[in-house]
Image (cartoon, rainbow, N blue to C red; front, side, top):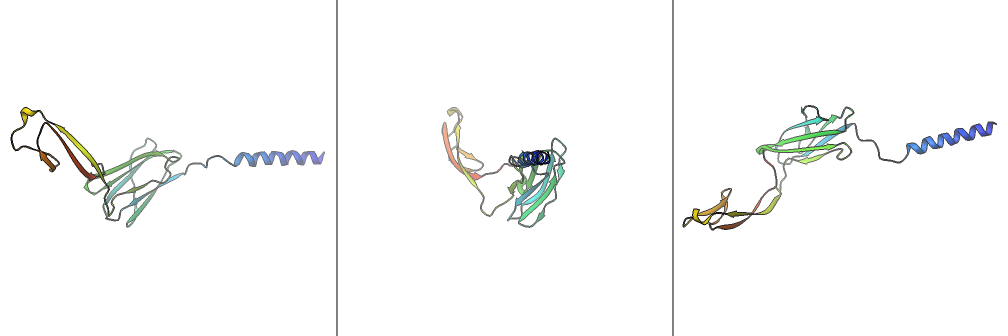
Length: 158
């Protein structure tokens, strides 16, 4: 009878241990935001847990700054970063999707994106010598259809 009892305990322990293994690890209980800022353009950061209110987030460091906040049992969060020139970057994610976000506030080599702006103007509005310009650059002689190729910094400004 004793052997049967020990076998049942060993079998039960094996099943419990097997159930604990495998599967995805639980999401973190806190989030650490990392900001790369080699040119010193960082101004402020904020975070949101769940659908709560936005709170200021203190970051420490020089060219690489970090700040951590608790999720308080929630999984959804948001972080917002404001750099100079009113550049704002916002992330909304879950702790499983993005456990430790990393953003760049400035870099020594800005990223540019090539694109074309197509402008159509009614011919009756054009006069001799008119030009079409996008943001004061890329000017071409005006005609009813003008395509202007540009390279601009990749950022969203608010």
